Image 1 (tube, rainbow, N blue to C red):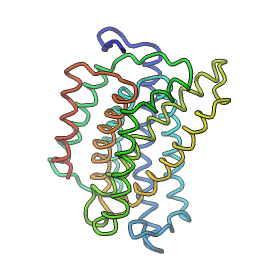
Image 2 (cartoon, helix red, strand yellow):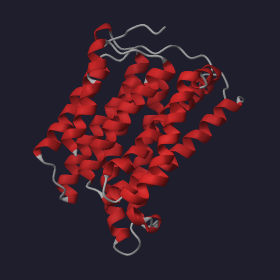
Image 3 (cartoon, rainbow, N blue to C red):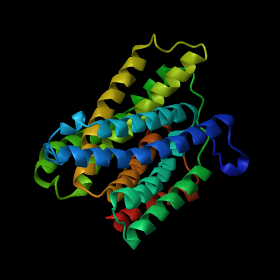
Length: 295
């Protein structure tokens, strides 16, 4: 059973590395939302919009610039998961909300009302509290250990619920409500994203161990996690593009962050069996409560 660990007890060197990488990731990802949005708007002016099922943005250089920026951020994020618990890394995405909201206001002329600003502030407050109470993660000696955790009944049940809910949203709700209800697109991104983070975490651990001299590439489980990462990321990107093309960036970013973070923390608690201190658990309500402010 993982022991409690808080900022007051001092962070491990790995946690500090993870924190720095996560903050760097948020800077790049926050900026990428804006660049991709401009690319989507430019592509939509000359072809079928992404929100209407078009893929003309694949020919737009500005969209690719945004994608490259996001990839750089995701690489830093990927590395962060190899060093620190998902419960510490994921909430730091709040920084990307501030960056994207400020840049959306300056560059895209998208306005956030007072409640939207308050929602962003609450996201940051909640993130800070969770980071301060992030537990020390158990030591993982092999990707096989992660696979065993991922195939336990509790997490398999969670994964089945996520996949089922995603299919229902994609095939039933998106055709009817995708253009008018932001929660549909964001729901798919967040649900699938919680699985992708767990797979990224597993793959990051495998690569970290491999680089330290314990080759994990010989195990089929490593490649299974890789396939899950690819499938999940492609699905996330597809529906995130649709959300960005259809709705205000300053609204998409915080809602996506709130749902994605909450589901990722839940998935991490189930899979890795980490436990937040009571103050940290109570802050999860801030994330859910934020949805009332940013919508």
